[in-house]
Amino acid sequence: MTTARAPRGSRIGTARVLALAETLSEREWQIMGTVNRLRLATGLQLERLHFAELTGKSRSVVRWRVLKRLVDAQVLMPLTRRIGGSLRGSAKLTYALDVAGERLLRLRRNLSQGEERIRRPAPIGERFVAHTVATSELYVQLVERSAADGFTVDEFRAEPASWWPNGDGGWMKPDAYLSISADGITDHWWVEVDLATEAVPTLRGKFLAYTDFVGQGQLGPADVVPRVLVTVPTEARGEVMANVVARMPAPADELFVVALHDEAIGLLSAELSEADYE
Image (cartoon, rainbow, N blue to C red; front, side, top):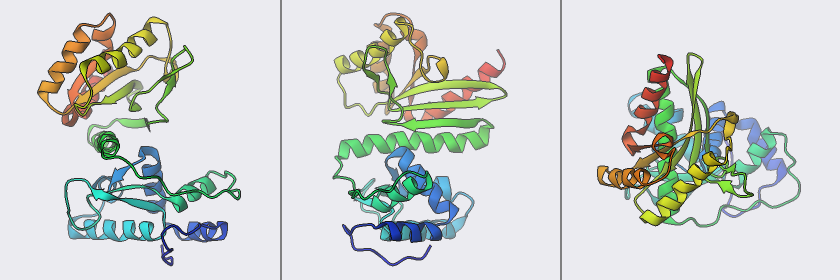
């Protein structure tokens, strides 16, 4: 993709969007789609998803070059704060979709461009960034594990696409919804990513929304009730979660599964494998 660098904050006209669309590689379209799906993703997460076939130094060099082009064209917007410190380069920058990226995806979906001006995303708080990036990491690990364990990631929706009507005029608001399948078996999960920032009463209220949903006979995506995976940063926090679930009414003990962030995807894979043999 070769394009002149547009000044930050400049208007992205329809003619420029059309010209830009002609120069994008399939990899660049996929990167756009990933960031749109997840809302935020780090450079390293995008590298693992979209540059995995490359090895050695070339992998980071190509990733840097591609992401820089997308930033220069206002397809992606790097957040000012780097996740994990002041590492130079794009690996630890966090990216959101920028104005040209939004318009390009609208174009590819045959939606009207109209005359409206699409504004770049507003400043984002650090807690939101940390939580969203943690959810994105689960998606990246899920894709990586699917290749190793031989299952298919049928769907992954981050907020707000993961939200679901609760039957009372409100919404279930999991951090993500996913479905994975193997050998004709499909598992459905809602996901709550915990970063140990919420108090126990808040957790209990959040979890009761799920048990109430089940108690009212409501159904989620694919006309099933997804189980709820709660991921936690430490074993101590996992014990807090387990105690909250233990004090809740049925079917909480069957509905909720608590796992460390780094062990969550292995648990999902194991659950799917066990279902194959039942």
